[in-house]
Length: 150
Length: 150
Length: 83
Length: 83
Image (cartoon, rainbow over all chains, first blue to last red):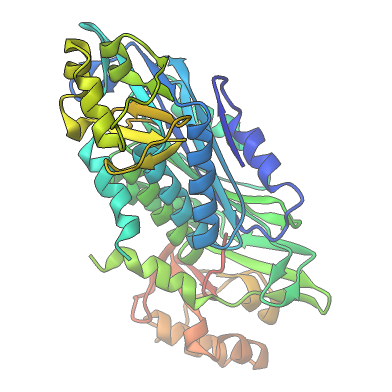
């Protein structure tokens, strides 16, 4: 399941809903991305995430389907926020549930790597010198390219 | 922080408490282990986890300190239950918070691998043929041995 | 066709969305980008560095040689930086 | 010394904990396990397969050659299966 929304989310309630009644699940790996108050050596007071309504959802669905194809997942969830956020705010939640932990961990990390590098989101940070659009990070590309080296 | 307890835990509240006010955290990786209703081809109606009070806490503290030493973690948490549990019940929560996601994912998986193979817990399962103590799983040992091959 | 601009390309160009009749002779993405750069300094500045421009047609990432047809939704944006 | 048994070793031996004066000549874990096996069929059955026996002394995993002294807490258990 994927959701793209401006609202915050409740991590415990989401994981609970994802797994409820599915007693073949042995583990749920999850990742919560939070807004940091620094980027490099800059102090960040707020951030605005822009997305491409329609395409963003399509991309997230495509990536989730790919994870379901690669790993034996019993349930999965991607929630990604857009709009303006403050330091400490939750930005993204990925949760993957499987019978065994390795599949859950790997697919969760796979989804996060793709979200960081392929999903149509753009970040504008508010610094003491004003707002600036963030440039793409090569280390994120390297993380995502792991998954195509097989 | 580590806790060994018979009570259930609230995943969202635990992650929230772990990260509150720490705005240098970019992500929290977590894993929730749940009780499955099958093991191999056996149906399991309940499970009792026995532990070694005192040593279990020491081992968990040692393993958490090792994770803190290996990865740049801002916060970490291990909660492990003992006692009798039913299918779908939460058994264990590991959460690791770092500035960047790779450290959070790796340390979370490291902690889970060690919990499965080194922490003094023993599992007794209730099957249609009666209660039986579970034998150690070689695949878990293989997962944990990854971390010593460096 | 419908053109969409995102993030700093949107900021530089000064518009988020426009309708454009596909000009004669513009058959693919590369040709469209060249056409847009010729519209003035804002477009030239925003689209000048090809390495920093990504394009989706009908909500799917495409390469420079992707063909265009009337009615397409063409989105132009910088490399994504989400999450 | 204090002896603790866990999981199926506890079930087989039929006790969770006992006090034992370290017998003369028992200097390490291996010797203690041999001594215990000699106490009767329950112990021999529980401790017979060395590969399925783990030992902690004073709450730390140890090998068979770990020395013992009066007052030690010695825990004997099968390989862990937790989580």
